[in-house]
Length: 347
Image 1 (cartoon, helix red, strand yellow):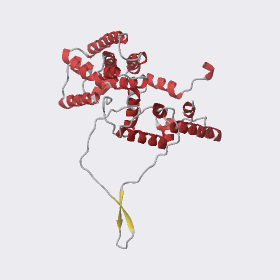
Image 2: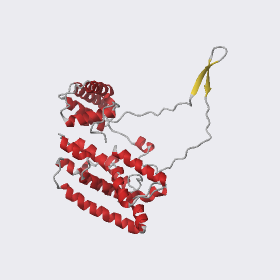
Image 3: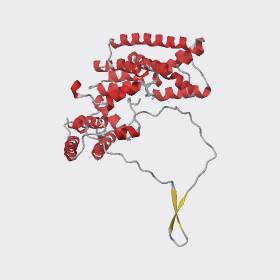
Image 4: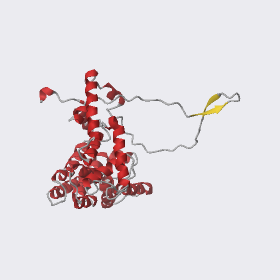
């Protein structure tokens, strides 16, 4: 409860500092220090492709205009008391796993900066135990995954083991090779790679670790092998994304998407290609619905997440690029969810 109360208090103001140009110090003949500005010139310029995304509506000036009613000595005193409560929870945990989960919770709430020294000390101790193979939770796969993720997030070079998520990098590399070679793959060749570059499997792997209370070797192995429920959900994410964003991405020089691959392969018009992609989405949804009720080593709580990922994709991209261009439905949805409070009279 203390965490969620603390989360309602405003975050400290961030001050932007402007630094002068790089300079060097030199000694004059009379021994005084003089400052000399180093100037550098370069005749070569490196051109990079630009996404040309419009400025998001949640810009700096808009965020600075927001106000909070939680100010004054009364709220400051209450916040300090809550911070002391949480600090005591960190330093005197009931269980080792509970301590890690508390750190994870603080990070997700955006409050970890209030307890940097405590978190650093805890993770340093865990890292030392890890190096000395003195980990009290090494038989608990869930606890191991939480510990692995937190240590990696804070810069500790924990061995990869079975939790290091790399197929995505290989898929992106393949797309880069296609781009520089000017190669247009067949639709199937594209989809075999593109369901990975959608990052759906990464999102679902994180969700799997988040919602699963007791991990098993069977469940971890199944998740890392990308079962059909993960593959189908990621495929829908990719195809829906292509329908909403491919025109803008092609205009700025990206690789051909599913629409262009089908057009190149069959000679279809863009309208015909879009209809075919819609058909593939429909057929993949049918397969995903079937997978939802097949036996899996996953919890029922996780089994609903691939379905929701596909639904989220439809929500974001049904009116175009709702992720990269926030001037349409996305703007209203984000404002309603984050900025505009829910009137108490309507509850």
